[in-house]
Length: 146
Image (cartoon, rainbow, N blue to C red; front, side):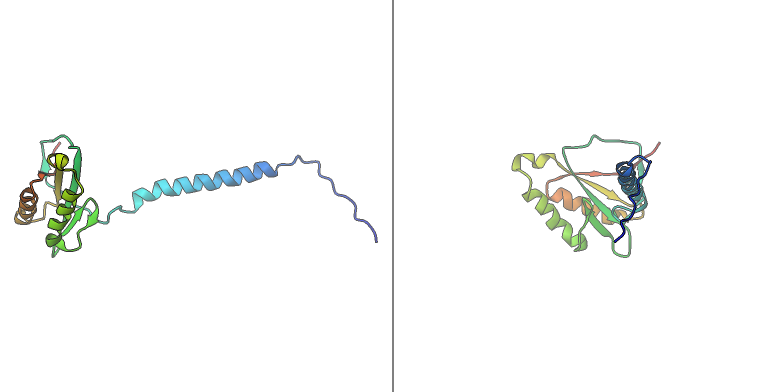
C-alpha cells in the first residue's frame, strides 16, 4: 500500500489566535446586545406623565413607589409590581410592608405616590388617604419644573 506524502506548512500555527478572535467577537456581541436592548425594551411596560413641581425633597431611607397608571380602571404598581386587585389591593400591600418592617423603623417608611397627570385628583387623594390611615409617610412625586 502506497504511503501518502506528508504535507508540511510553512505558515505558523495560528489556531490559538483565530480561536481567541472568535471568542472575543462573541463577548463583544453579547455585551453590545445587552447594553443596547435595555434602552429599547421598556422595563415595566408603563409610561406616565406626572405633573411638574418646583420643589424637591430628600430621599428617605425606606422608600416605596406607588405608581398610578391611567386607564378605564386605573392600574396600581407598588415598586414595579402590579397590584392585581386594583385599589382594594393597596391596603393589603401596605400591610405587608408594615409587617416586614421593624417597629422602630416604621416612622422611616415613605410611600411616594407617582401618578399620571390625567389621573383624577379624587383617585389620587383616596390613595394618599389610605397611606396616611396606615400611619405611613406619604409624598407625591412630580417632574421638576425647570
